[in-house]
Image (cartoon, rainbow, N blue to C red; front, side, top):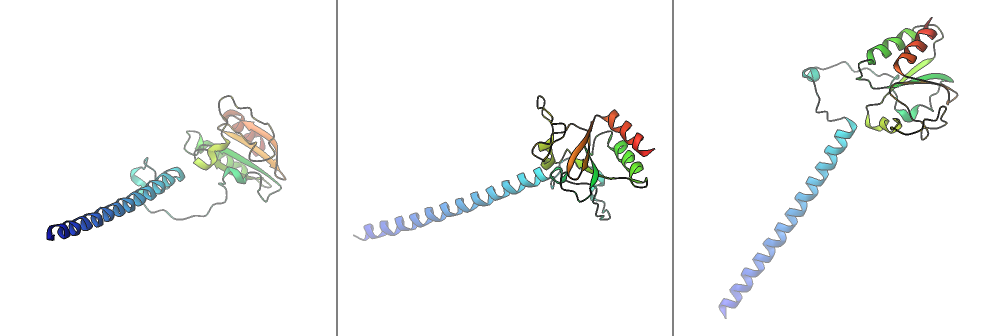
Length: 178
């Protein structure tokens, strides 16, 4: 009889240990899942970047700028007339666009020129796909499709002019800067 009682005690401890191990496994699985979601989100938003240069650890002065916007803000700027320049900020021609923009805005009575970085994940939705049709004067962000680079002129939140291509944008800025 004593052997049966000892067996029940052993089975009770084994059951408890199995339940404890299952609980630990579930807890570890949940923590791993949360970590995977965090890292995926951080990579998509650019918080984690694997293409860092050696100067990334140098502290930089913080400066608030209002010229870079997200694509969704293109139609909702407070100015009555303004330009939005869509391009990849790391493109070889990026410095050229920036210098053309700066030369233009230095002019008296120049319109504001906002910039949208097409490389950012949340702006990539407006990039034209291969066979997609571009609406010349879209009325909302859902209809907006652009190529890299594109300059749009807005008046009262509506597109009134579209200029696509590096050479065309350069010519346009040079003509309005004179």
